[in-house]
Figure 1: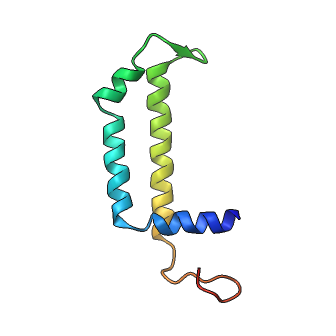
Figure 2: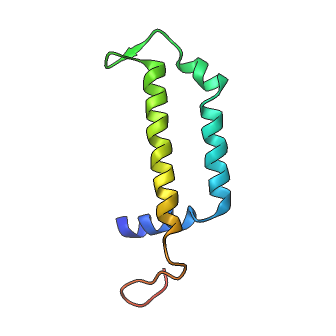
Length: 86
């Protein structure tokens, strides 16, 4: 199941629209409404909530960029071991 899911996710990330959607989502998440939601005097694991939000957002953006580059390096006609196109 996991190899098939991985293949589907990487194939869907090859579309230019997904690049634009993730870029806009990243910009929205790092602007005023979301930043003000997490700018509270609350601590999670002894870390301020805003700091944790920014660090997790940064980590997720790095992961998305990694998946995009992985999807770009896939051959266009990737075939299974059985010879069937995916």
